[in-house]
Every structure is written in C-alpha cells, then in structure tokens.
Image (cartoon, rainbow, N blue to C red; front, side, top):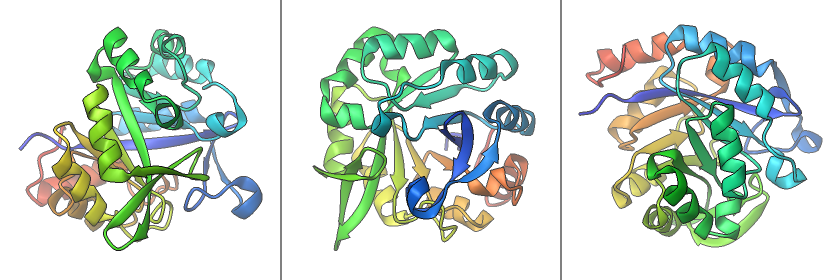
Length: 257
C-alpha cells in the first residue's frame, strides 16, 4: 500500500482563512475567521503536512481570481507541494498560479462549465498538475449530484459519472468534497468516497467531515481514499498533522514521516 497523504486545506475568503459549515455563505451562517493563510501554512509545513490546498472559496461566485501574492509568500517559506483552486478559467490562469509557486491546479466550476479546460491544462502542464475538485451532495438513494459555484448550483452531473469523465479528459487526481459533511465533524462520507475511488484509476482525496482521529482511518480503510483532507480540526488545534499520522500508522496505514 502506498503511503497515505495528510493534507490541510485553507479556505481563503478576502485574503483570510475562514471556516463555515456545509458550504454556507457568510451572509447565511457566518464564516469564522481563522487567521492569516501564510502563518497557517508555515504551521502545517513545520508539522509535516504532505501537501497544502488553497481554495479561494468565493472566486468563482464573485468573479475574482485566486490571490497570487498569498501563493507567492507561501511558496517562499514552505517546502510542501501546493494545490490552488478558485477562479481558474484558462490556461493563462493556471500558468500564473504555477509561476507563483503552485504545484497543482484545482478545477471545479470552470471545468463543469467547459470540460475541455481539463484537457487543455493537462496538455500544457501534464496530468499530474490537474486536480478536479468535486462538490457532491446526496440527492437520493445511492445518488450524489455535483454542485457548482461553491455548492450553490446543482448541475446535470452525477458524481461518479463526472469523476470518470474528468479523468478521461486528463485529470490526474480527484478531490471529493462532501457538502453534507462539510464542517460537521461527523466523519467523511464513506459511501460516495468508496464509489468514486473504485470508479477512477487516479488518486482520490477525501474531504469534508473529519472530527475524530478514527474518521481518518475509516475513510482510508472503508472509503479507500488515497489521501485525507481536513480543515477545522487542524485550524483550531484539535489535532496536529503528526497526531493524525501517528494514529494512521498505529492502525497499519502507511504514512510519510
């Protein structure tokens, strides 16, 4: 078994890291201000995070581009790979982020609107750079729909079908975000994670719902995830990256030390 990655996620809103629940907007349930993204990135770099994900959570809905200076400042002082998403619509946007220090580009709403952007990015920069982030919500028995624009708009896509199509177009990794579990600390959605992991030949990163150490092991063992992504439990100090890795290792799940 390959080593499983532990990945903190920074949701950036107006230059600050924030956290909400179930993709809630600031005007609906309040986005909690967590802190400066570069300071948090340094903390996770020191704790031994395998990667770091930046999501500019309002870029698509408000028409803004990702904050390049945050990426540049993070890349200058951190040595873990950086994945950046939000407001990416063209290969020029991708190139700007890669030049700023990103290692991977995450696509979400833009890929749903124009799927060929995945192929264009893969051809220009390689499939290893292309991550497709899928925001999925359960909409029926054994049915998860894909949502765009930060969880605001339901699309025509079923989650497994869209993941399969994204990989066919050149995505080298899938980040699966459970809208139902996001920020709830009740555990990852094991069912949809396993469904997507079994459907695609590329790594699947589980996101949404981590609240206990056992949740990380469960989504690897039962959900067959290749990596675990979390935010609140790290931001508010409930667990460190090292504690999660220790727990996984104690449960015979290989991790990078």
